[in-house]
Length: 287
Image (tube, rainbow, N blue to C red; front, side, top):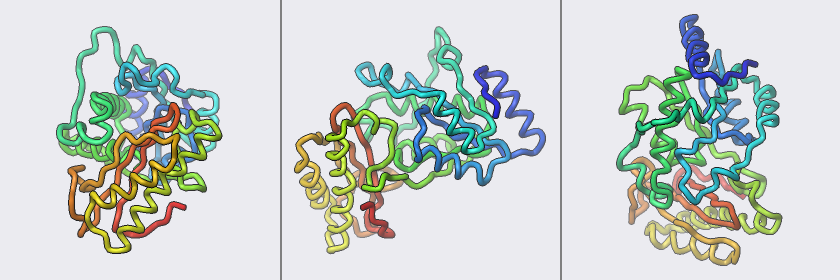
């Protein structure tokens, strides 16, 4: 397994691999790998001749009062997980190389970036789109793998790749969950034992939404209220947003006759936890 920090070396390595006819697949991460990341790597390994794992805690996607400084990091553990997942290259660029002094250029996907998490975290998706575009330009992948837990991010990156003719296939992988249904996230490490128990209200609320749909409820605001009540029963949980949207445009909808997508963000202690689930499509219980 190669470990590369230098941008030009990484680009040269990928360019040479493509020239040999190898399929290059990228899994972009901010490190602190868990089983959700391992599933992304497993998916990438299935189709890659050269599997690249990038590890970079991207400052451009953090707000001034967010957890950039305390975001969990463990490079030694990440490298061990990469070896176990048969990664070919770990690309771990330096912050000053990605954003050198005087850096002024950013990418933004209009219409998708200002909703949901974008409304709560202004500028977040501009930072995400920018760093992913830079990673694509450096690693030159044929395909890139993203988790559907970050569904809004997945849509934004897919739209950026389409609009800018990047020639990168964007592959989404189902959310990996804990046995009690909580979506795996690096920020779960912030939770105390009591807060971890409280966080179960999130998958429980998604299950409630599914049950309401199965009962025949199609009015989205009514289902949102049911979800809200489940979460509000947990005193340690603070709702950021609960939305039912079109799964392609992220626009709010009233009627769910054709199915829809539930999105929510909930704060439990220091952790801001996000989740999402299609409603009214194939039923896959979380609990």
